Amino acid sequence: MRPKKTILCVDDNEQTLSVRKFLLETRGYRVYTATNGNDAINVFSSTSIDLVLTDLGLPQMDGNALIGHLKEISPEVPMILTSETVRAGERNHRADAFLAKGTCTPAELIERIRIMSARKRGPRKATHNHPAHDTLVAKAS
Image (cartoon, rainbow, N blue to C red; front, side, top):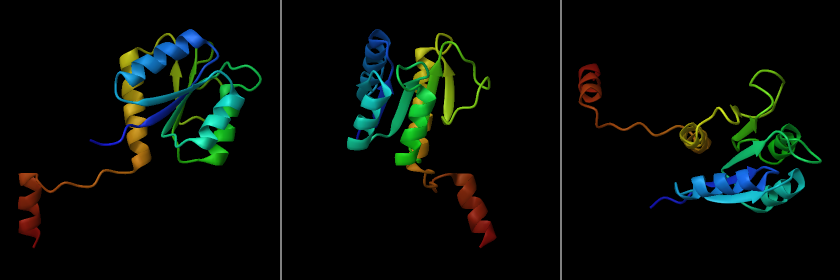
């Protein structure tokens, strides 16, 4: 069995945070949570995180500033920014993806996380069990 992906969820709404944690853990992810940017930086710095999911509206430091700090520590980790007040493209952000809270279904969130965490691993190795591919290779030889 392959190791679980580890996700850091950051939101100052503890109810939203617990729902996300449950949603992700029931799909096999290991989840760390933080309710503000400083706690998130501490968790991120001391843990191997595969993906960050953060809300834009955080106390002290907004989600975009948090992503800026985390990208300085580990630029290859995919980061998703969520907001219920801002739409994608309305303002610049450093996130790798943007999801609108309230219009994004749990299934869409899970799928985006699956795609983004797969991207961190790098491209998949080509498999050579496709008959058409084998025929083309044989003809080319």
